[in-house]
Image 1 (tube, helix red, strand yellow):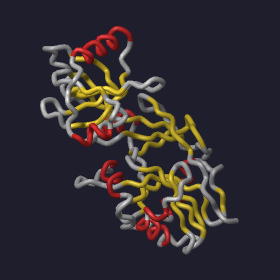
Image 2: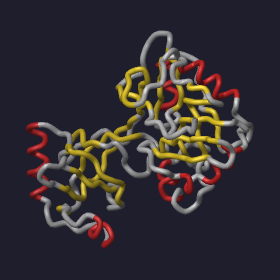
Image 3: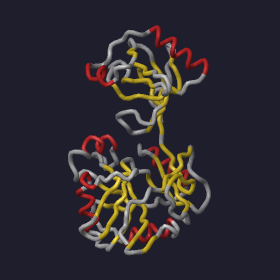
Image 4: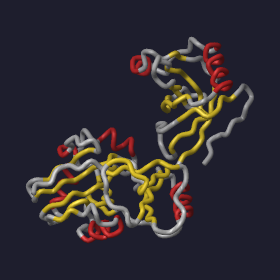
Length: 299
């Protein structure tokens, strides 16, 4: 039987790590979810989480998959690029993946099929042991290690290291495509006080705020406006009072043609993923009035 792409199992996002026994914990790798389908050494394909064929973008990983020496397999993982510290760097991956097919490394964390056997009804821990058994040293396919210790302590260390977060999995969970509560992801966030430089408000869409480093007008990304009630109304009043500012540069003006640009001086506290140069998964949490010190940049 020729193997084909299988929609991946997707962890549920939660606020805190699960307590108790029966869970395994891994670093949440910050990259592109990727599935490797092996039908012999000359038929190896790489797919995105939606099933798009990205084989041409992962030449290095495909070559590493051939070196595994298996007859057939489906391997689930995350394609990443690393920075100078050896940590996953999502923005580096974004900027290079379409130019250099040898950029990516696959962090392999599950296996669905192996040498003619469907493994999806076997527990997660046992599947991962089988996956580990076929890994090769110094390869572009690396095993995503289980971290020892209790979940709370593991997440604390991940948070302090500036990594994106943690994935916790029930050790006995079978593999089923789609959303699941048997896998949980916990992300590491921080708060920063940033200068609001523009807003985008379109009917039927969530309002977005564009931010820059305080005092420099250097763009750092956008965030959803999640303020409620009185705070939200106060924000719009302040935006109108400071309307008529200039975009940071011509490129930003072209990229965001519907943006209402704001004059300097309006600050807000933004919650966003830790360790990123550009805001990701960001939301506005508070409007800073003139004279407020705000939260600074905190863990």
